[in-house]
Figure 1 (spheres, rainbow, N blue to C red):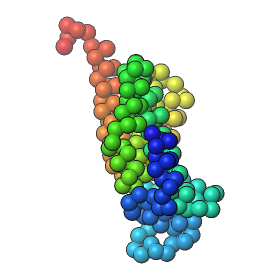
Figure 2: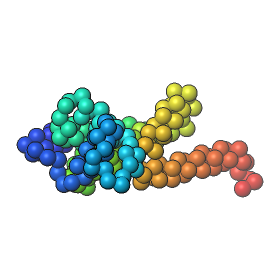
Figure 3: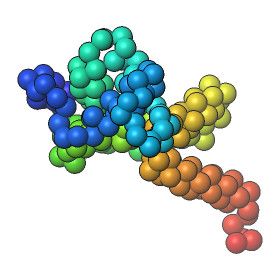
Length: 192
């Protein structure tokens, strides 16, 4: 999918649709150029994508190339991010590969790129990694998984508003499941 998208954007001077311009405006504001922000603030939208875009734009010196490349990298990383989560939850490599295939080729995710949903895609990538770490904490109870879970949970909040809501719903559900499993293991069968 990444090669397809690269061929698609390489010939276009501008990224598709208009959201890319909004993200560039926010990234430029983070770099100190606040015109034309009008009544918006740089942190009105969760800043993770815009901060990455500002960094890539400053490093490359070409804002249009930076947004097209960052959008491509984020969308292309979605199938890579879902694989370990799907594999860990299901215990099956086949299901992990199927989930990756769905993320790579389902039209809704290509459409997300088309309408400029780069922060949404980044939010999904971070969400998948955060949930993966939550699952690993449950299975292995290791400090490294807990630290990873805390770091990526914070990054979810910085990625997208809707992703944050979804993440906290998943985390709450996972915590309730965890408590239920602990209670179910300690309660004898004849006392239920």
